[in-house]
Length: 183
Image (cartoon, rainbow, N blue to C red):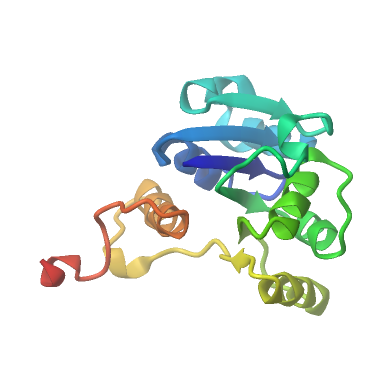
C-alpha cells in the first residue's frame, strides 16, 4: 500500500504525526510551509524528524515531484490536518502546491482521498466546498474525538481518531467499539 500524507497549516498536527507513525507500508510526506510551522509550534518537531516513519519527504513547492503525475500510482492520499484554505483550493481545482496537485491527481484518477478537516465552526463556504468534494468521492473526516473508546489522555484521543483514519485507508487496527462482541 502506498499512501501520500499531506500536513497543512491547520492546528492538530499530532493527528498527522500519529498517522505517519502507525500507517504501515510506503508513506510519502508533503508538509506545507504553514504545516511545517504548526509542526514546530505544536510539537517542537521539524519535518526531517518524520523521516524514520516515511519512505521519502517532498517539498510542497516541488511540482516536479513524481506524484504530480497520475502515471505514478498511489493507493490513497490523506491530508491530516487539512486547513479550510487547502480544502477550498482542492474543491475549486487550484493545484498550485504539491499537496493540492496530488489531490487533483487523486480526484482525476479516482483514487482514495481523505481530508481530515480541522476547523470549527464551519462556515457555509467551507461546508459547500466539503460537499462538492464529497460528491466526487472524497472522504471528509473532520477531526473529532472518539469518546466511546474510553480515552484517558490526549494521546488516547489522538489515537482513537487515527484508528478511524487507518481504517479508511484499509488498515485494521484491531480496535473498535464493542469489537470483542464480534469475536
